Image (cartoon, rainbow, N blue to C red; front, side, top):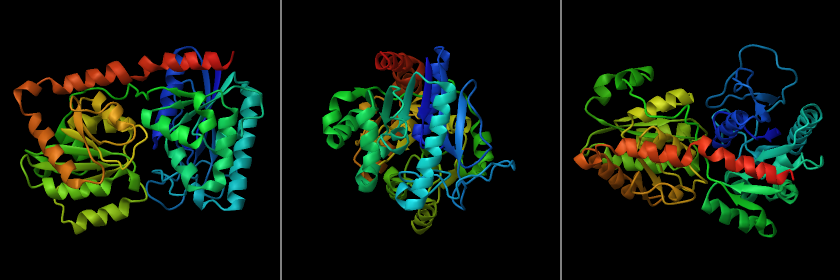
Length: 414
């Protein structure tokens, strides 16, 4: 089967990008041909083996994590950065920031790119990431359309009413819409009540070739990020990985760090990621007088695996998280996870892998971090990291889930 995927973001730096890459790689392993239409603001990116990419180029701006490319010439990039629902490590432009002229340019170039792929690749099915603008540009070709609602698109639906017709057009045309969590199902039904029969629940998956338990030299990992041994020696390592956006709740985490960093056990907290809240969070950490916090910025996924493997606990303090793939990836490396009792996280985070806390509650978060760190030192938790990794591998590895998607495609093309 020939599958054309359309995503609003590059393959790295966002949950939907990682999701798209994972699906493409594993669909190829099942024998399918896959191509992806997506935005890029750099020509310095890696194509997954055997997956064809059709990038639409944008101009990077002076913002956190922006890349300037490798020096090659890109013909006619759009004169602005690619838009996001909140922010992306390589763009802080939102869909709401687009002028009427920019929106017109955005839809025109993507419509041309999609039309070209349909003409040359001749896909059997189109899989649109997000119930949003880009899949709505592919509805006039009599090709079955499947969507995945990632949650941030539903936030966009609420935030920008003027863009809702694009989402509705895509939803009207699709054969099915994949929901990545129980909470997401509710949100989809509320916004598209007449399309609720199209919803298919399908859990998100991680790539087990990237995230797995691996013995790491803690000193070497820390040294790569400029952290000296005296800063982490005899301390527990607490981590956060994700976009530095308001809904991720990193500001709440910083308040919690103030409460736990001087308590037993002693800790160092690593914040991995970038985004539009970066400067604000740096200032908050400084104002709070936090002594054992290090901001690592963005790292490649292979390096993120190293960070998870040295982590004693990983945190997902989101105000609302549609799914929380970073939590699964951390668990796949054996790291216990503490997450908020919101969105898709309660679907798979519980006391057996760490625990849940209330959002917006730094006291609850701090207390839970201390409890989990102390739990790890007890004899009955000797094999806990292996049990956590086995749970993730058995239930959320992409190769365990991909056949469900394959079956959905086959039903859609009948």
